[in-house]
Length: 120
Image 1 (cartoon, rainbow, N blue to C red):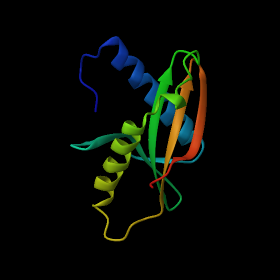
Image 2: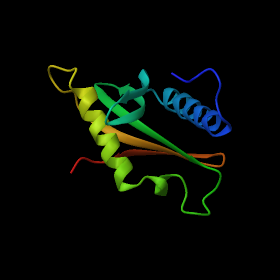
Image 3: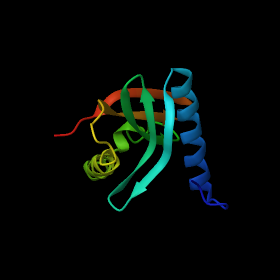
């Protein structure tokens, strides 16, 4: 999941993902997989809410001075998330209902944005 020795930025990212995971679990989501990676992209958290498969992108910023965590998701990042989700879904015979959420962490404020990214 994470390398043994992490840079400061990687350590902050790991802590952000752990905070997001704990928050989502408190709200009833179940972790299926963390840090799913493929050639085309990465999904921070793959979770389940009832019958729905939830792909979660975690973004973290120290503050909102430059638009905040949610605003940091570029069109290129969205394409990588969508491609990684498509690769992940190839393991299913019958596609489950699914959505892509974002957990935006600005400083200590966490915001869960459901269905934040939609496939075109």
